[in-house]
Length: 106
Length: 158
Image (cartoon, rainbow over all chains, first blue to last red; front, side):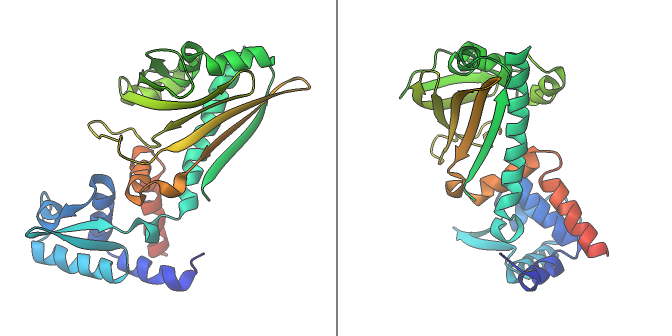
């Protein structure tokens, strides 16, 4: 279990709307380059790069080299506690059971 | 936590519940899938997501996945006792080939009890699912990942 000590740098790193948007975008669209991350925003590539490094320092994102590009991705383990997504699936199964109940009991 | 387990008592006879689970046509009617054939142990089965026939509201929310192809591997079919299959959890994105990704195992276990049939649903093997896929599951569900970001934002605003 992670305590507040480990969570604090994560929250601090996300304490900026641009950084929060970067993380949301990496979550929604998957690993991508800085060029793609910059696309459609008014933030400069240099600024995005700076934010990414701040996020990487907190362990929220990480990068790998792919040819000439650097690809950035969310390090989900720091953000998504396994129990959160299992709760999600768990509630989906509750709905499935309700459908089966309607089918066999009515 | 690698598994989810749900137990419920259905007020219906064992035969009826078994048929609702083991007959792919009946299973599809309530779950919301049009299967291309019967469930056979050890065989793959394909189909398409269709809206459920038992709940109009759920059917509406399933509409966005209508027609999405699915492929399950039926593992065991033990009459009136157990039906199990492997599938790809969160496999709801169009144009993504999930075939090389790890699967989870889903088991429907039945037992006759006073007043009906006890059903235990178990899904296991989540530890093998890539974190990226897990994160995507949140974007696929309202109140999931978006909600997490809201919580983070609220935390920071205090």
